[in-house]
Image 1 (cartoon, rainbow, N blue to C red):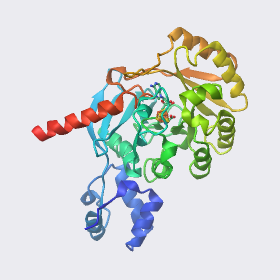
Image 2: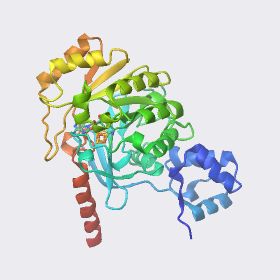
Image 3: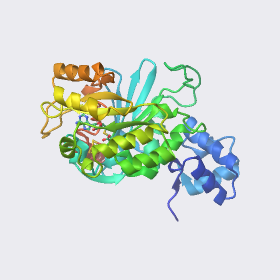
Image 4: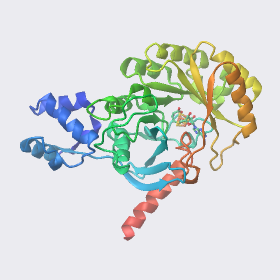
Length: 376
Ligand code: SAH
Ligand code: SF4
């Protein structure tokens, strides 16, 4: 018998096409989409308004499978982190960060990453594989269930948009992996996030973070424009070549031009530049002034990320006073600049480093979890 199809791998058009091959109407696919994602349902028998014959067909040919949480930790500040088994002794992480008027889920797009940025522990440990669309959207599906957030209604967020009971109002793809290197699966998952039959998130509240794969930024602009964060980390090519090696392929002038093109279609009228603060490497006043010149023609905000150290990393975090002065130079030039709070430190969940420290420990944890299971 062939493997059951995972319905979490489909966006609404994919599900409509799969239903059509089985002689089922589009509205049936939409109905099932709502059960899957609005209700967080994983049991065809519970889909009570779906015809019995169709439920039986689905049970025979399909399944609803999200990554499994093998560890669930809550930080003292409410940040919650899940370690998710994606098979083959690989695990990725998803982190939920509750704030007063929004809840942000940070999710992963790949197990490992091939891009090898100098300060990133995921990069240091190499590429394992792309996550499927179902494994990507499955992180949101699972978090919603574990947060008890399915099937609710009501409430408004800080910008007056209806929350429709959403505990998770924002999704950022800042976990493990380079989302734009897993383009098709990421776009399918994004389309489910935005779909009114599923999560109905606003495009402005879904953020893809990229190290700057220029052609894929152009494709994203065409196929699924959402909010964009670009990992800049250096104001000139010589330094960026060293910190973010993909810069050798797509240098800063091309990256800045791609940012400008992206803004023509973006749901937000600025790009967020992420900038990791590395002591004595990219954090001087001169670097800040060079940044101001670099981004002169790109409407943007800056998010400074204090470096999160990991074992054997060659960098140190910039001192708080240095970060304040650096931010001051950007702010004086009229650029909105925030410094990322390190949250969830006690569970290693500081988002942005999410991957940091993970893979090695992850492998160990998976093995541990498996051996514990085997023993019990
Ligand atoms: N691959 C994508 C998204 C995942 S990383 C990207 O690079 O943008 C999310 C953010 O965390 C990126 O800005 C990344 O550069 C940053 N980051 C990676 N390792 C870090 C570390 N050790 N400390 C602080 N930020 C880190
Ligand atoms: Fe990959 Fe992003 Fe880490 Fe660079 S910073 S290695 S692109 S996950």
